[in-house]
Length: 102
Image (cartoon, rainbow, N blue to C red; front, side, top):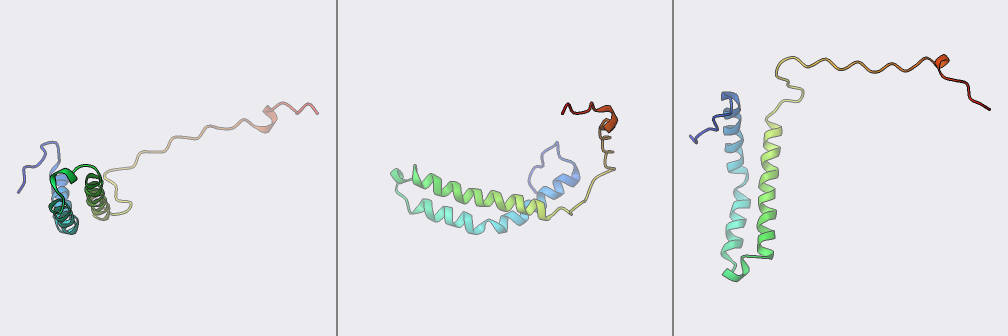
């Protein structure tokens, strides 16, 4: 197992492991495409357009990571009690408003 971030709780570490495992498999295609792209370029072609192509593939991996994290969470699942909503300000009574001058 990888070294966990000491600031994570046990629950957060387990969630990180779950996301990592799903992401390992979900990003295989993108990682393979990055490897093929880099292998196909000469040294002088690695910078410029190739950087943008690699960045786009890495962004796809990041999007999958966020999607994986969201799918692992239940909708409406909260930890602890929700805080009470603030009370709305009261509007003045209509008699407190001066009559219009026309």
